[in-house]
Length: 474
Image (cartoon, rainbow, N blue to C red; front, side, top):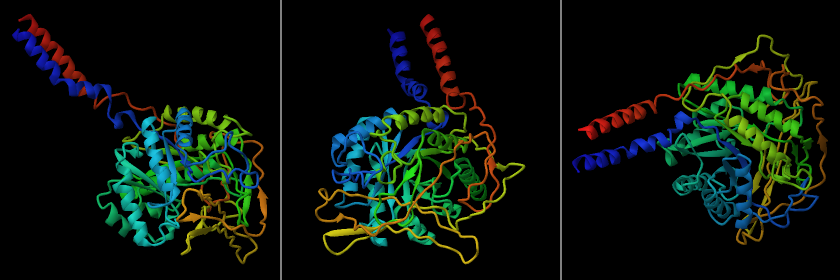
């Protein structure tokens, strides 16, 4: 009897050990989440040929729970781990209510969700309301079990943080997140933001000019690596994949353009993103219908882009890029860099949106897009791609953003490359950035064999079995 009691006690004492064996630590497994930007402000007024370049197979209202459930199931089936919803802040606006639903639905289906924090939101018009929005997000939503976490911390994306200075953001962060308990991902290609934010992403990598996904991704990888070396602390690089672009039906844009979508181009953006060894990959987008970047099933393309997403997401997650916690390879220029581009925009391409709330019950955001010619013979256009919002007027009777159509605008159609280069080919520098050598990523190294966190538990288990055997013989 004594031997049996002793055996039971010893078995119970090893339960924590079995938990360690069944669920290896995150750092041992590595993290390679695939995310997608998500929009929750559509209604029956959205779906007309003069507003969107394609149609969903079933027009929907974003506020319906059944719609969000369908989106979550489709995204999860395509290998997407989390949706990044554009968020206007707390209060009576559809993005807040729909994000609450998204979190609950994501939890039920084993997914995660976070926000793309809209610094230009008409519902957060000043610093006080912006601070309240951040406090609400961190203090309420980030505590939800389905809120996106990476390396154990909630992750928040930001859009148009340039509205305020870096010093202002530093002061805001000291007020709402002084212990850096969350991860902040800024938008844009300027590494100086990494002094306040924890990572960078590019919302769009497809502009009016001919784009080169590999050049863009490698350039960003190098800039983040340089920031890591300079600061002695890890910073996150989130690479972007997208199928094309078409904002020609968005009212008020005088610089609308089409970059023809194709499975080949979508695949090339994925290959470029994977080769840049990112911490995460984000797709632009799951359902930004107004700008034609959606991968959601449509009348014209069916499940083509969801199927391709499933394939490429699996390739990324099974790739040999360094996992979280491992040292990342340094990025060095190729021996023979390509010549500098002949046209160089003054700044990186960004989306622009100016949302100006009015004191009445109707809020009127107006999208602006500017072009800046220089005085020299070489014109230097600024490439802008504007994310649009179409909040449902039926959901927000107290404050409903609406749009006022403006005069007609010029539409540019970008000719896509006839031969999509692969990652292994030597590519020319895209004219989207200042002159920089194309950066070659070293071949991905194989992940090290499983060791460290599992060795001690295994040795303990062997010793325990041996002890049991000896006690039982006695």
